[in-house]
Image (cartoon, rainbow, N blue to C red; front, side, top):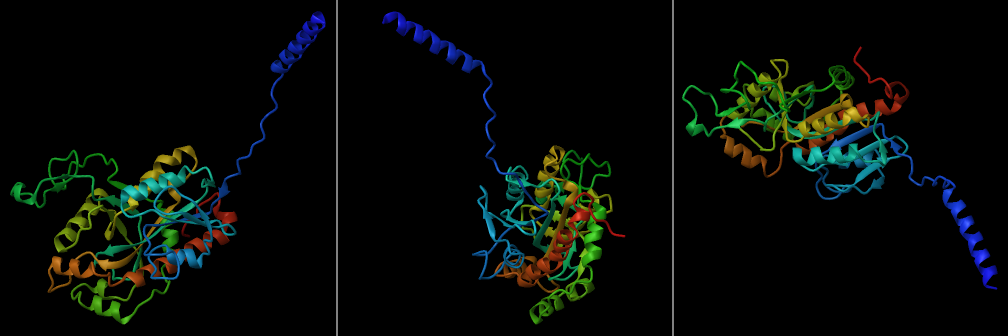
Length: 358
């Protein structure tokens, strides 16, 4: 009996040993394939709910583009997709820290294939009254960062300095020996920007008596007194909500300096350099393409006071409610949706080759 048991045990050991040497069958993959995305609409904030109340930057996209499939997102706001069109909407949160981290998180999100996706920033902004009126929409080619700098309090600067704010690694404000840019200036794909502008330059933008009353105050600024219109104009991004004639002059010079005279300050916002930088970091992986980014900023307020008011008076009044908020939100959708709809409609052409103006 004992011998029979030992013989059986030895046979079992031989069988198990043979099984352990045989290759294991490949495990069946259960991970779903990434969802192809054609356009990511990047907005920065919403007021209240995503639908049914006062709209901010996201709500009109959510409603009119039928972004009805939610995706949980470990950031400021969940993502929403229209599966039939491939349009994905996001809300990053305000400020370059939020925009950079949200865009980076999405760019690396394995649920989506963003390798061919176009990215459209569609948000409100302050506008230089020398260039445009509230309710207007500006396509940016240059993004300039207003935070990366040295600063000395104005009460302590040398007497021959126009400002205490000057570039890192420079010896004075607007140093003609310009330091090598390191995050201070970024250029979008010029051909794509021009295509977007040409596609939308004749879009009719909303106007109303409230806008007309606000712009009438800007005597001596003919562009500020025009009804809303579409233009090309560059963006200065900074985490500080600055305001006033003197800072407006600084912004104009700062953009001119960093773009070597090729850019023109038109809109002031907070987030766009962060958005671009994240896409630039991920682009070498092939997961996204920074050359498919468009930045559309629509004017909700002026960046400086009108004649007869102080900077403080005007800023505090605007803080109770931007005079051009509803018009700028509508303008962002009217102009931006033309580009989004065209990309979706001509995806067979634009998937591999970005459009360019003729």
